Length: 297
Figure 1 (tube, rainbow, N blue to C red):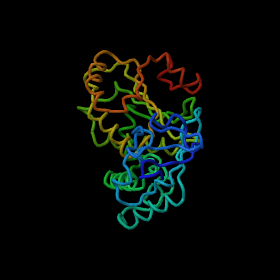
Figure 2 (spheres, rainbow, N blue to C red; figure 1 turned 90 degrees about the vertical axis):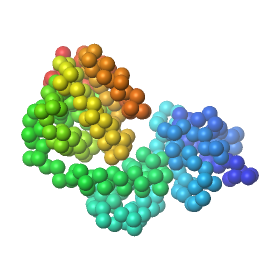
Figure 3 (spheres, helix red, strand yellow; figure 1 turned 180 degrees about the vertical axis):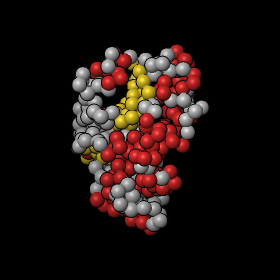
Figure 4 (spheres, rainbow, N blue to C red; figure 1 turned 60 degrees about the horizontal axis):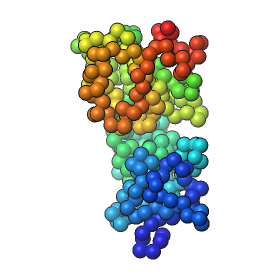
């Protein structure tokens, strides 16, 4: 720590060059100086956004390690000590929550939320607690094939049998088959969560995000369901953070675009994941053999 606690210095090799603002500069000695005002991008290093003096307590920030180069995305190294710290906190404070896979002691789940919260233990415990409580209340682990069979049979959403060229499991929503006035909101939401769960379970080694496709061909006002879109955004942000890599809106008609322009500001950074494209451009994401059948032009 520099004089008067003006900065925090860590090795330059711990940071990818794309993850730090101009306020963070490498010294000739091979270290990086982080000013006490914590001038870091919100999406880059959230755990360092508040100064130690404001927290008034010890944190695990000294263990924060970011590895990578300018050509690679930054990677937050989760240590066993951090996982244990979160696990012990949850056991002490939320002992009634389930254990096992996707439970309060699941090291993979804890590690993912630590990465999402930039290794900030306090923020990880808070967000993971909300996620685990939601899983319990929503009944995520009780969703069976039989339970969602009726909703799945309508064909309004499905998990594609093939991954895209990047290895991402793909969830396809066929908008023209979705009728919110006729469908059960409860069943639609259950189906949505079940598909996300399956997609996450199918993530290959080295890939951690899903691809979402909204087939908007034939979309009319009867298919519009912005409350459901809001539900999806909340689910991905709160309970499956950073699992959504990209969303494709296929052949969106004007009636959809008008509603989207109104709704878009409410999505925050998630709106940046959206790409409007035509069905003919799906070939950028799949080979002819792996492309969804109903999207082959």
